[in-house]
Image (cartoon, rainbow, N blue to C red; front, side, top):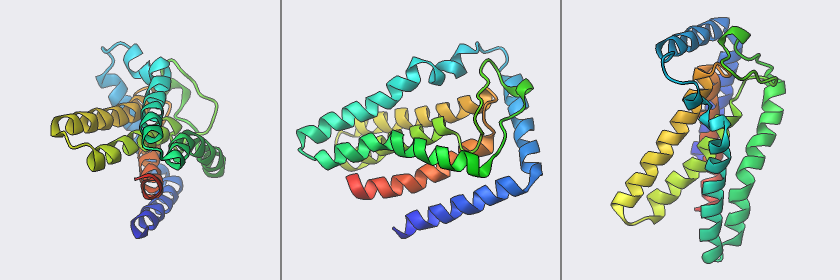
Amino acid sequence: MKKTIGILIIFILYTLIVNTYPIITLWDKCLIAFIQHTLSAIPLFIPLLPDCILYSIMIAVPIMGGSAYFFKEKKYLNILFLCSIPLITFLLNCIIKPLIHRQRPTYNLQLSIHPESFSYVSSHSLVTFCLWGMVILYALKHIANKQLKYSIITFSIAWILFVGFSRIWLGVHYPTDVLGAYILGGCLLGIYSRCIL
């Protein structure tokens, strides 16, 4: 529990720093522009994948897979905890975004999609980090087959990073929004892991 509280304190301090110093937003904008320029030859549908059907599938896969396993093991409370992750992350975003009130990157940095809501934290990154983070924790603790375990962990980490990176690439979130989502996700994972694992 001390680690979870420590991560929460880090998140609060990080949020204060990001919101207090405009130089961070300037750095964020430069990094977005650099990424977009560097990757300009890559088709835009690639960073848009998390916004398309893949995002729904990638939320459904850990929930359905975990729920099926927990149902088989008769751990019904674990199903409730697992299924609550998208709802909890959504509610946290509904509280944090208006509270922090950080504007999205400028319109000229946004490729293809133009969200209306505030920027901090990235909801895509947060829910992905929490759900696939649970998959990683579960694999570490319960899967004996090393090849299967490391394949699941590698895929999960790659998906978490890809979703976060795609938000920056599309210019709909600052890099610090994604990092903030990962820090908050670490705090939530600490709570969830105590309840489920």
